[in-house]
Length: 157
Image (cartoon, rainbow, N blue to C red):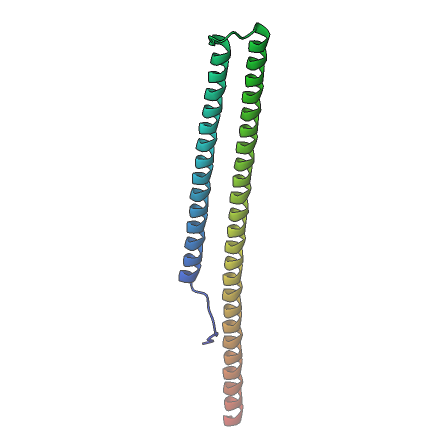
């Protein structure tokens, strides 16, 4: 029987795969939590900006202080432009965050798959090498036994 210095057992392969799956799950959960927190903060910011803009419009339109019609229009236009800019910036930021998260998840999953494939290939190669060595040893032993038997038969006869 051939004994190698290091053999990879099925348990070791299973442990590696389980650890990789746990790492993937943890990364995905952390990323989802971060995205949810970012989206909630962004939504709160948008609500705050819209509330402030609405208050400014209400002040401009209902002020007891005399404000000309053209000034009211200017205030409303400025507030609408500010709200639109803030909403666009927020949407772009959320899209960038989501894109970053997706790229991160894809990279982690690809790396984990590569590691699993490498581990499986190494296990297969080790098993094949061990089988080949065992077959060679068995063939050599059989050949030696046959030669010894032939020599004994020839010498005895």
